[in-house]
Length: 213
Figure 1 (cartoon, rainbow, N blue to C red):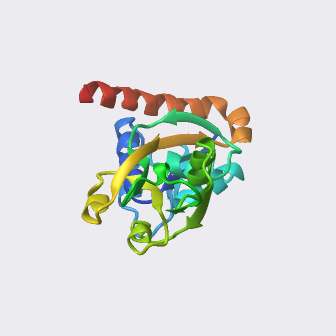
Figure 2 (tube, helix red, strand yellow):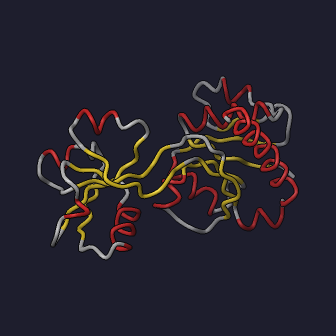
């Protein structure tokens, strides 16, 4: 049976395609895609399409994609109607709590800016804190500087932007990396084909881990 795979555009796309190429898949058209958004594998009965992170979940949940590759940050914020089968250990970063001063030590009502209101809200509720989450789509680091928020919950890769703006990291909410998700119905109908892809990628994950030791 043919498979459809949704790849999150950008750095995850590039790194995932590199892994698939090492598995022996025919991803040359994905690597040289131009403006095309749906691309065939030249060696296997697979088609790839490129989507934004949030849309990757939507396509998998609705069965348009059998398999999706998307960051754990998007999964934590988005839907849940899929199987998460593999941590690719690429696109690594962290959800962190940061501020000019420590928002975790502030008494009373706390305002937190974040692009990820579900993640932020869940974290602070688990600490029993009275928090107002303010959704920010742009540069979340700006909110403490202008007095809108007491702190932020955001993704951090290197921490350079935080340091340049005088913000300190006070806690890590979760470690993030890219995950392979699968449509539930497709997993019943195409289990062997899907598990072959997962097994191939898992081999590369292990090779990468051994190389990095």
